[in-house]
Image (cartoon, rainbow, N blue to C red; front, side, top):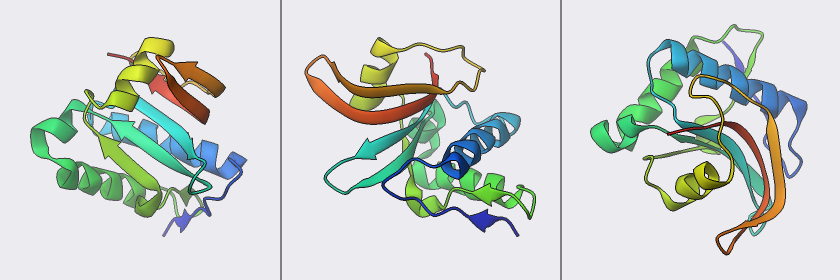
Length: 136
């Protein structure tokens, strides 16, 4: 069975690799991931992997979390995976998703590695983030 990574105050290489691999596995299962990013929450001093898909709005968050669990179960046993406790799902109309889409656009099927730190978008301050995908 794959091993859960430890999510800490510092965005580690294991976290970034595990997040990218999860997005790729979700793509293989037609999960319609439109936006995916690690977002730092300074008040909690931790990171959360945020994944947005229209399927969250269509089928509900519980069904999408099931997709993530199934994708994690498909990981190689030597591979690190992001714990479901460190992942948040959202519909594509969520305000933070709309802000990120406004600020940075990526290809619809790409898995990028764009660091976006200490920036303000339409009055909302983003302490730190790592964007894999931000598309419509």
